[in-house]
Amino acid sequence: MDTIAWPRGRLDGGGETGSVSTTTRGDPEHWRRINALLTEALAQPPQAREEWLAHLAVSEPSVALELGRMLARAGQESDGFMKRSVQASLLTDVEGENGLERPGAEIGPYRLIRELGTGGMGRVWLAERIDGSVHRQVALKLPRVGWARGVAERLTQERDALATLEHPHKIGRASCRERVFSSV
Amino acid sequence: MSGEAEKYFPLLYDELRRLARSRLASGGRNTVLDTHALLHESFLRLQNAGHLVLNDREHFLAYAATTMRSIVVDHLRRRRALRRGGDISIVTLNTVVANELGSSEDEVLDIHDALETLGQVEPRLVQVVEMRYFAGLSEAEIAQALGVTDRTVRRDWERARLLLAGMLGR
Image (tube, rainbow over all chains, first blue to last red; front, side, top):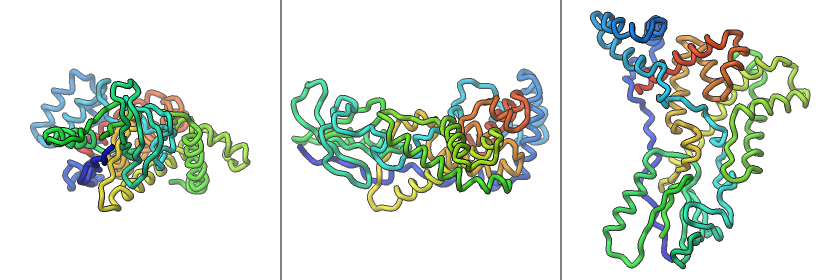
């Protein structure tokens, strides 16, 4: 069994800034006006909105553009923005507190045997393949519960980078319903 | 927050967090609690314990939704601070949470910030967002709590959602 390759670099995906210009983002005056216009637009049948927008665009093209983007989401069942409410599973802040990680638990193609260590990033478990396809034990790294943009991609990149190396120890990455994790 | 809401805030805050923790600790794998169930249970518990003189379940739900928003945001900020604290990066990923949440942590925090502006535009829209998005209440419950029709709630929600999307440049 070999050491685990932990992805490096900041992976929290976090920038504090949104993509709206800071001049309008927090300006209530601007949004009061947008709200009034939006209310007016939504009161009209959908097929009449395009003409309404075109009319607005003559005098205020940038406002019309902004409203056009917002109206495109109106009544769209497929629009995922804020579709689901926040779930209380967010409130867990101790890894494994929700019972996902325990001896015998199955994660992807692996069964957890015992915990090898824990750290700031998550836990490492001794695990074995469920399907018995490979008769060896692996160290399985389970990132801390939470969510960050780009982690899956980073792990994939890491796996791909390692795959190009000639090395006696191979790294695999498996993705299952619940986790992305890497094993060595 | 109104005076009454402020009075109940600390009590609700502690009760909701405690309930969430005990549920998550005792639940089996894949436990996902819905905030809606938590609110209802906390109401019954607080009422039975004699902490609530407030008989009115509807008002309670509005206050509790505001509290739930604070709990979620405080938690996400703490976790973000922890993650940035060390010199090694902390990898976090749990697609259960991501899927159930429907939004990334960043998105929830962005929505929270944008609600400050929305509150200055039309305060009722913020209440609707807190009750629906942060507390998972139904349209009928929100309508009752705010004393408006279901249809008004539906329209308010749509407008709030579009405005927030606009504010966040989505």
